[in-house]
Length: 91
Image (cartoon, rainbow, N blue to C red; front, side):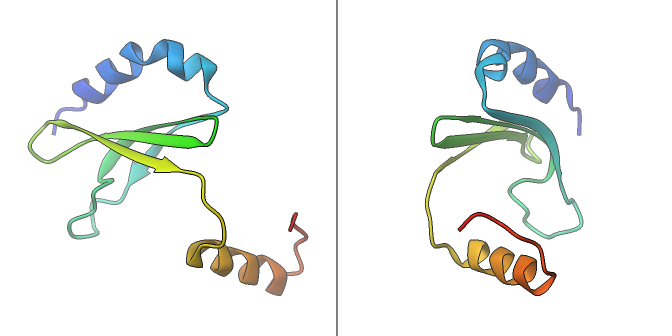
């Protein structure tokens, strides 16, 4: 899979990238079957919204959108693990 569309998308998203509160390039595992975040991802946060852009197997860019939420099962798992390991965190 050619990563050029992801590189081009990162350049095109430059102004949003510069403004983002959180930004990064992440990697979705290819070994997980049907992983919608497969391969290189561009991830940015503005306000209470997160967007991650990746490239599908067909070469098209995929835009994954998320908004801030609380009391999730994943958040509960993270809190339990941090607490078990004696790590402090904001409640």
